[in-house]
Image 1 (tube, rainbow, N blue to C red):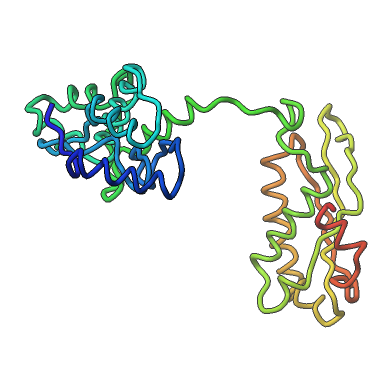
Image 2 (cartoon, one colour):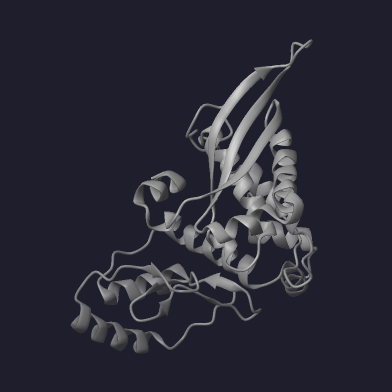
Length: 275
């Protein structure tokens, strides 16, 4: 194994004598900003070999340096960990194709050498520049991710109560259609929600009465629109979405009223935000 060392052992003798004077005995190995195992002010334990690949520094050289620095010698197992770190660096910093060319082996063999123990089903060819191969990688990551704790029962898909959800859907449709200052001057209050029997059928329909509330009387006409077209369109869009997410068909009675300076009313603001 070819190893490039930075400086001679005499250089390291003088370097670590100086370090010990500054930092004392027992320097701690750490990973630098690129993930390279290091001690002192930048003494790499994993270095570039003559073939351009990362390799672990020879164990005898490391222990000679550690002895000078007042650090216990490393074991064979610890040196094997450095070898694994070098393999990981080759995987992250050099493309598999380049590794294959350097070692004159196939790309699959290069990946196997760089990341031993990783099954081929978890190796992916991706290009962030071309946006290729990302979906299989993401799917694999989602499959591997552990399931988290449930925040509410499994049969629920939200912890928001029904009137609040209805109000938010109506508000969204109103904000998408209204212009100028109006989207910021309204909120929606759902006053009544009632499950009603359908005559001649065992089905039920959900009857809802909600109010779009604005700040000034002059704004009511803009929300209603000419001939009631605006509020009718808002209601139709809200009803369409409600019918897709609720188990009952919805009859929506949508109206407009004024709540003067509601944005300065703490009670209303707490109700809207759920705080």
